[in-house]
Length: 476
Image (cartoon, rainbow, N blue to C red):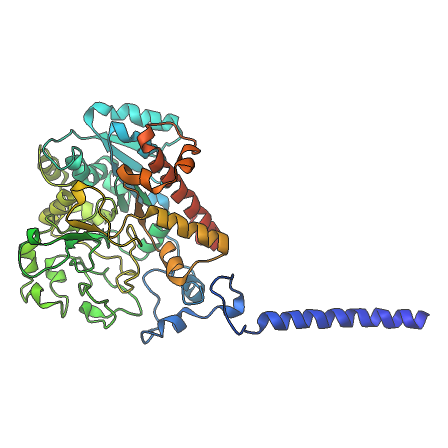
């Protein structure tokens, strides 16, 4: 009997060892089929270079952004290692034009801009001092309010205020107190962690006007812009890439074979001005040897950033534009849309044109500022004759939810979630995008017409924060 007990004691650890070994072997062995629907195991993760090598010879240099997924969902951050995080929320400044009847949207935006200094520019009779004190009372100590008078005769009554907002906010906040400005509408949501990651490595003293969401005629044959439908974002719109941009697909002066069809062949801009933009090699013939497009699509006239998609501006750009000139320039009663007024002012006072952040430039499925997947949209009489290829906040919510619930979504989906910079809710149409019971069950105090927009603001902010925490990419 003692002998049998000893045998059992010997056999038991041997059996456990065999079971553990077999399990480990099954875990390490590659499966015959890798499902895109199931969470991936470590052995299924390939390096990002394997994915990229399907289309290009890989250089041993990281992309401008550290996040990118290969076919099996491994991020570039895992392949290349994390970036050194030098920028913080205190290096940013949010600038938002609004009005007293849309303050519910300003309050709703606090969730995504928490920890970031902000200036909200409203009309003069809204008493900005009182609004600042109210924000402090409500716990938002980094929010400040400024004022600019209403202007009549524009497309919308707040257009001039929207155009002057970034210049006024920089002036009020002080140019030594921030490095980058996030400029968008009161129904624009910025994804701060992604924005900070994108800005790492860029020089804030360089005059940068960053966006990849530009209005431009959908055709360009040398006739003035009025003869064509306008669309945004339009990859044909002239732009630069960041100074010293690094990407395995990139080649200097727009000569890369990986520039997608229909895209402007963007050179690097150090800074991005007409001289730099016109150096782009092999752009379609209608651009002309002397960059004749500039005579027909002047910056600010069907060639400008989309205000709802937003833009990121360096302090170097804002320092280069004298506030006294802007104060006089925007003291007007008429004009075009606020975003077009802003771009015209930037170009005419500094000569600077937009810089594409770069990552989506070589990846046609990607838009960083206000991505959309619904195709062309037109929603109201003021939109007839234009094509909106962005404005899909509910699509972003669906993708975030799917990734959080399933562990991942498709490669392009994950890539977009980890690089998207902003989303435009477009408040006046938001109610049509949200199921009534979801809106009505949302705890909210404010104008009923803004309930749906504030709901979407909160959903985008909450889900994105959860996604950042789950992926481990959340910034301190």
